[in-house]
Image 1 (cartoon, rainbow, N blue to C red):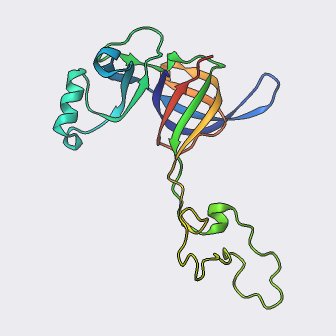
Image 2 (image 1 turned 180 degrees about the vertical axis):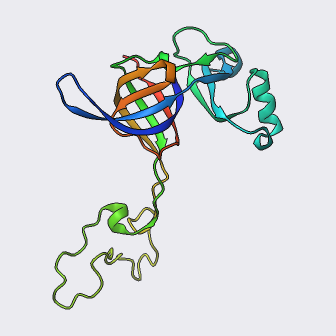
Image 3 (image 1 turned 90 degrees about the vertical axis):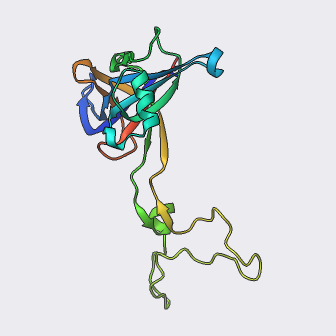
Length: 209
């Protein structure tokens, strides 16, 4: 599936033709460099590996440095592989820009959600808690309640909804509408929210009809 790597800039809003205020996310999409071309003969499938963002040489391993040198480009911070459904043929070192998308296209966006640290069950799983603090209740309004683990099974089952680390997970948002493309600034404006904090990397995949 064709796509590109980008960086989340932030949210804004635009007015539609009907006069409605539409919340949007602005993404700096590319330009990305083709760092590897995979073929059926050599690798068993067709794909393009794209690199995005600059990386300091002192933070790049020798293997990575040689890999990018073969493509004739500087070390890249983010590398992602896309199945080769791009329009046209690309070679090592070619640039993939935001103009692979068009207005009114639908895209899928993949990002890592904001990390929220260690959270209780109310914030992490949406537990309601106890509304009325009557009949002797003391300091238990946000507690998860009994786990039911007594003499059997004498342990806590994995996956039980309890307190723990929240956020920081890979999230895919499907079917977001491309509102606007600004090629001279490599900007892509999509309808709705995108997972991740400002400045975080996102993967934009084009949906084929």
